[in-house]
Image (cartoon, rainbow, N blue to C red; front, top):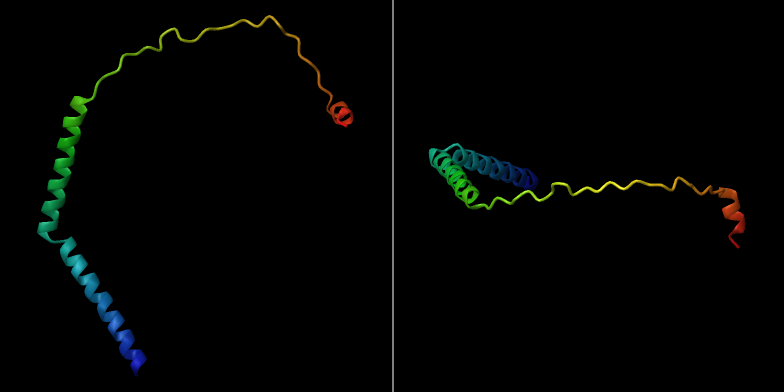
Length: 86
């Protein structure tokens, strides 16, 4: 009997919680507050974007190409490297 009452209380608390959350979430007061906060954020972004400094581009002719005249490649033998390691 006590177990059923406990489950009934749990279900009742969950249902009441869901009801009150949904009631507040879909209320006109909450919709107005969220719309106002979104407008305030948009206005703040516009103000801050006007204050941002624009940096000059200083990356022109930054790459220097070097010609390699040494085409000699050293040949490595894997097994000889292992044998010489003592």
